[in-house]
Length: 150
Image 1 (cartoon, helix red, strand yellow):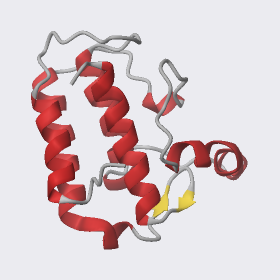
Image 2 (tube, helix red, strand yellow; image 1 turned 90 degrees about the vertical axis):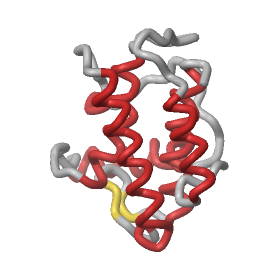
Image 3 (cartoon, helix red, strand yellow; image 1 turned 180 degrees about the vertical axis):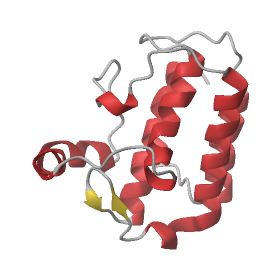
């Protein structure tokens, strides 16, 4: 699994994002490239910005019991998997703005480093190890950048 906390790992993701164009087309799925960039930023918004509501206790139990392992392991996501409602981006977005926003989140995560994320609580899954955070960030980015052939 690529290390989002290393300079080389984060740079590789940023380089892939910089290959995207406003009219890049996906190999699968329904999202446009601007929606995909906004979608990828949601995970970071949950960490850095207070814009997403924490799930209630019952939903957190379900997420931790049945979803967490699939999200934080190293197994790549399959194509066309369902996404949580807060990750659905249905309106068009400004490509350049979303691209810059996602790159800034990736750079901030790398600068803060693994130690900042060790034992850090996720809104949905509770406390995670830095490895689980890395897997969650890296495989989500890889999945969607591969979707757009970069």
